[in-house]
Structures are given as C-alpha cells and as structure tokens.
Length: 577
Image 1 (cartoon, rainbow, N blue to C red):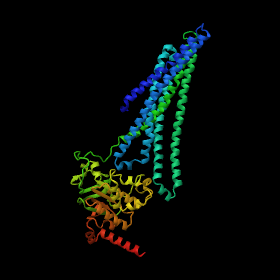
Image 2 (cartoon, rainbow, N blue to C red):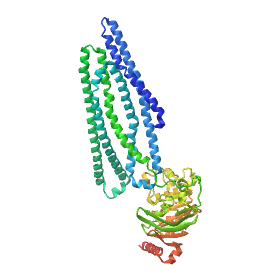
Image 3 (cartoon, rainbow, N blue to C red):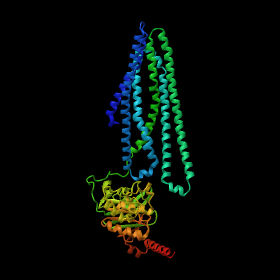
Image 4 (cartoon, one colour):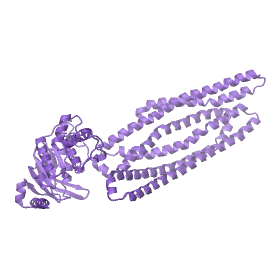
C-alpha cells in the first residue's frame, strides 16, 4: 500500500469532495421548501424558483457524480494494482521455495490462496477502504448539519445507533470465523480437483470416476454448507441494521413532527433533517457489507502472509558472495564421508567417492538404496549441512544456487514437459540457444528426426505434461533439454528406462560425442547403460558396496556380476521366445 500512498491521498481528496458536495443536497431542499412557502409568490415567480432549485439539485448531483467517479477510479484502480503486485510477489516467493515446500503444501491449497484469497484481499484494500471512508466522511458532515438543525432531535434520532455498533461487532467476529472455514473448504475442493485433473489417466485406468465424483461432491457439499451459513449470517446482519435505521427514522418523524408543530423548527429544516437520515441509510448499511469484506480480507491476509513469510530451507545463506554470476565450473565432484537422513530415517551412510572432472560415474543398486538421493544432493535439491560434498574442491554450500545450478543439467526420472511447443520445451534451460544448437542437442538425444516428421515440426504443441508424446519421446526431449545448456555436470536419473536398447546405445554414443568434457552421472538398472562408465558404484542400504569399472566388478563376482548375469539370461530368453 505504501507504493500507492499518493494515489490513496488523491482518492481520499476526491471522496472528501464527493461527500462535501452531496451533503449540501438536503440544504438545497431546505432552502427550496422555505422559499416556496413564503406568502405572496405569484405563479411566474414560483415557476422561476422551482426551475432554479431544480437546476441547483441537478448541479449538485452532477458535481457529486464527477468526484464519485474520480474516487472510485483511483481507489478501486489502486486495489487492482496492488492485486497485480501481490500476485507477482507471491509467484516470486513460490519460485524461491525448495522442493520440500511443495511436498508439505498441496498444490490446490496454494492455488486457492493465489485466487480466492487474493481476491478477498483486493476487495479489502479497495472497496472496503472506499466505503469505510465514504461512511465516515458523510456521517461526519451530516452530523454537523443535523446538530445545527436541532441538537436535541439529533440525540434522539441517533439513540438506536449504539445497538447497530453492538450488532456489527457481534456479527463481525462470527463472519471472520466462518470465512476462515470457507477458505479451508475451498482449498480442499481445489486440491481435490487439481489432483484428479493431474491423475486423469490413473483414475480412468482403475475405473474410479464415480468414486472420485462422489468424493468431490462431499467436499463441495461441505463448502456450500459453510458458504450458506455465512449467507444466513449476512442475511441477518443487513435487515437488522435496516430495522435499527427504520426505528431511527420513525423516532425522527415523531419527535421532529412535534417540534414543527411547536414552531421550534421550520418545515424546510424538518424535511432536510429527514433527508439526511435517509441519505445516512446506505452508508450505515454499507458498514455491514464492509464488515463482511474486512473479515474476509483479514482472514485471507493471514493465509497469504503464510506464503510471504515462508523461508526456503535451501538458500544462499552460507554462499561466497564473491563468486561472480556466470562462473563456469570444472565439474569435479567429491563425497567425503557423506551421510544423509530424511527425518529420523538415515538413507546414506558414510559415502566417500571422487568423480574427476569430465569423467562418467554410474550408480546402480536395488530400489530404495539411495541412488536418487545422491544425485539430488549435487544441485542442492536436497541439502547437507556438513562440508561432506564438494565441487571443484569447495564445499557445495559456498556456491550461490544460481551459479551451481547453471552449471548442472538434470534429467529426472519423472519427465515434466510444459504445455508449450517442442522448441520452447527444448530451450527452457537455454532460452538464447540458436536453432542450430537446438538441432544438435536433439540429434544427440536421438529425437531430432522424429520431431522433424511431425506436421508442425518443432513448433508442435506437446499438450498437458507432454501428453501427445510417448514415454520414450518425453525422456529424449528431457535429455536434449539438459544437453542444450552445455552443462559442466550432467545428471541422468534412470533417463533411458523408456527407450529400447538399440536407441539407448545410440543416445549414449551421442552423449559421448556431444558432452566430451562434461562430468556425467548415470543412474540405471541396465548394465548396458553403465558398462562404459569410468567408474561404477554399487549402492545398497545407503552404502557403497562395490566400486570400479565394468570389468573389475565382473571379476569381483559380487552384486554387479550377479545383476549382469541375470540381465544377460533375460536377454537370451527373450531372443529364444
């Protein structure tokens, strides 16, 4: 809001002018009634005065309309600008978070905060502020003129107002509580919908459509039930306020009429007084709506503030700020007695290993042995707190995240593609890459020819999460995307699982030719993938059981040799079939 303080100032001045002009409307009526009641006016003079006062009333209304438009344009416009800024701030904050944040918080809940809650905050910072200021200003101006007409009548007429204040406080607290529950329910159904859309194939494969529809209907029923209870509360608040104002008007008519009969105030003043009371009706009723917006907005601010205050667990706190952006690493990796745990569960135990720059390390082992954890530590997707992982001889935490990750290309197990063209997906990590460089990376990943055969070539849209591509095509696209960055460290996490052995051999050959000076780390269950690696580490139960070249490990006759014989037998059986 501080960014728009001058806008708020001009909006407040326009709103002040609006009410300063509008408060004169009853005074014009008072003057007209008293003037037209004078004895001795002929019809021509009467007509002239009627036209004069009618024109004056129209002029007041037009001038009020001009300033009202200005105030709404400025104040509501500011709320839209704040919404724009806040949405950008929220997205920037979410981009800073580490992967663990998204494991702890559901995507649907985050989306609800960025849509429903953000809209509630916008209404708090725009309409709620404007109508609150409007009510305060007009009430203050009107009170001044009411007191000038009759202090005693003003006191009597406003006697029911403390009741309205008590009602506002009573209902406001309950509105806040109920709206927090509504937002929680909205997050629930948003999460439910997001998970179903993302897992649409799985739901259809298991024929669980009806079950999911029923589950969503229950969550939606809870949401609508809570929303209707809020509507019931608001439905009680506004009529109650209207009733209190109605009582005030009745008191005004009875007490004011008596003063007119006693000639203590004239008819014009009596009509003006009642007009002020009528004009006060909307601002005071608007208090009920403003209370609703205020309670909704403050509840949503708490939920948005939780995102804005969230600090990433992985950051540049221990980084050497003197390392310039754009620094190119050699790619040497060293593990020195590294151990790592997820909570109380230790996954890696005293890992010691050196990977020279430009060499290839392959990691094999049974499922759950910690292979993906090892490679997740290198780009600091996971974090170690001791100096047990070094790159180019320096503890990895000394590198700014941007420097470290700009030197690393990662091909994860679960390939993710954006709902963009093939070209945009390939150039995601290297937006300045030329068309020739893109084609070279696609050629190395053995996917260029297939893409060129598409009707729209590299401009083909891949659909949601790459749904129009096969599993093998998605994996090769992901490999090409990583290669296009020309990384100093290339990490392939079981990235060839969806391609046949013939294509796999061609891809590995392409990698050797394309990334000659790149440090490569391969994870695979296939011996054919890892056999040419400079080092092969066998990982089991979080420890390195065997380490050596393909021939050395075969000679040892351990886990690796057994895995090789098993896969060799499976190949022979598949050929005989």
